Image (tube, rainbow, N blue to C red; front, top):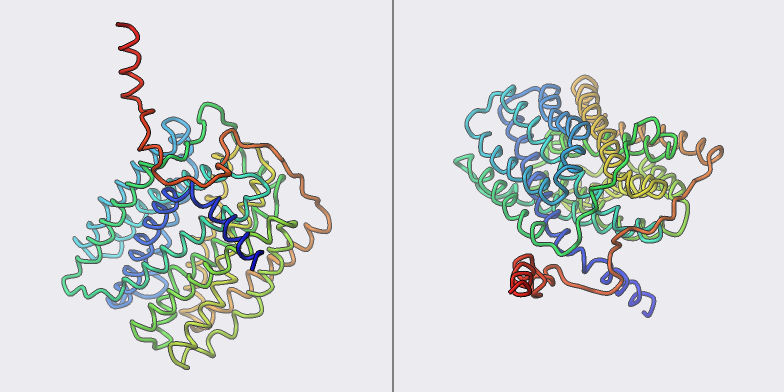
Length: 430
């Protein structure tokens, strides 16, 4: 019990100063997850072909690619908090526009815009978080971040059950969630990273530093993109009801969330490449058998989806942690843009290829693709472990996460504000 108590206290100590940051992240993920599944279901109901739906939905990740190429310049110019708030506001404004027309090309344009906004926001969040972490706690901090994202995403799937005869209620709810997400991030007491010092980072240089992390981010995007964009279509083609479809999506993401903390802690104690090897092996073995549980009731569906999610959603945070172990603080914004670019390429390519395979050879290829991708990644990782040692950069962050518990908005109760400082200056002059 003492070990469990120590673990809980350790996690609380790390999580407390991040509470506002994580709250904003969770609300953001809940909103975009609900929107993505809603659009997939409505295109299926409107008779849009699976391959065409896959292309339209993957345009969301084309926006990610554009964001990864140019948004780091915005972050380095105005800072993380301003950038996050600006692009979440744009996303909130774009969401209701889906109601104006259901034409696929129009939705594709909106998805492109939304992808750019959310890609920029995640670049802010991840580079911010990794600047505050050290190599000894990066795995658990990224785990807490991913737990928040998957908890928000899974709760978003449950909101699919809200009655919406008009077709507008879901869009209004998504826009409201995005607006509320601005509040905790805007008021967080966690210092924003220093934007006065930054280094450029090329994709080739990043690959030379961390080949497993780079390839793993692409592979993760391939599989995660397939789950988010095609998971609901796979469930519907497996003749699941709307309720069972929401359970499948919820439990897939929730299963990935449950795996984050133990796997993240484990990765802080050893070479993260071995952790990636084991989790990919688990996914390789489990994925082909999921379809056998789709006709056995909600409990079996939930269990199968949870196991699939465990192997799918753990790859990205471990890869990001592995990369950030080997770079300096001044490289993190650019490195984050490159990692998002890699994941975005996977997010785009995965749904297109897998939707094509599903349309021509059956929906079983939704599951078989997980074994194929994870198998290739296992072989690549084996080779890298055998030939390339890890070159850790053990630099201390300029403003690390506090080691003592704090609260989300504790600074708001203090008098150390810009207005108070201005009054102090004026008083001293007189």
